[in-house]
Image 1 (spheres, rainbow, N blue to C red):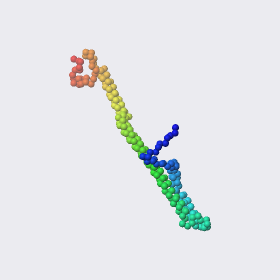
Image 2: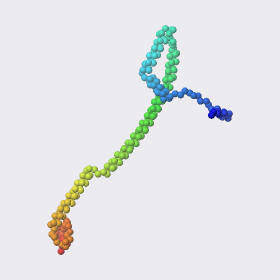
Image 3: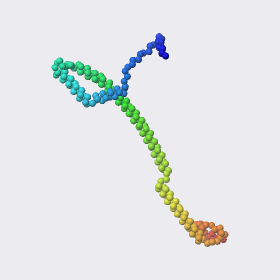
Length: 201
């Protein structure tokens, strides 16, 4: 189906025409500009540029007149150096902008990692504090040893009292109404005071 062109309206302004400019990869151009700026910022570039300019001066000063292509005042050399400077400055600025963008991204990444590390450190600090509080309530080896020693002493004392009571029960004379009570420490009080023991008349 053939698309019909929309008729132009006279009550509206004409849409501006968009120029189709050539497109290029900004990343590739940025890398290229960084390479140029990096090369221009070395000692080799200064040495090579100095040698080139001296050779230019020597050729256009010492060579025969019909071979000099840029006589004194060196207008063509001045034009070349101006053209180089006019392109070098934007390339260096572009490289600096890319470096600033990388530094900004690195700073944001460092800040994010620092925030994560701070959160991890705070979490570990809370966990350590919780463990210390929990360890304060856990029985230690020394505490268990002291408690076991105390229980052993109590068991030894109870066994000794049981042996004494059994010995006194065997030594106690028989009598009474057959409902003999176990011999205990209170029975010695009656013997010392001269009172009759309970259950005897």
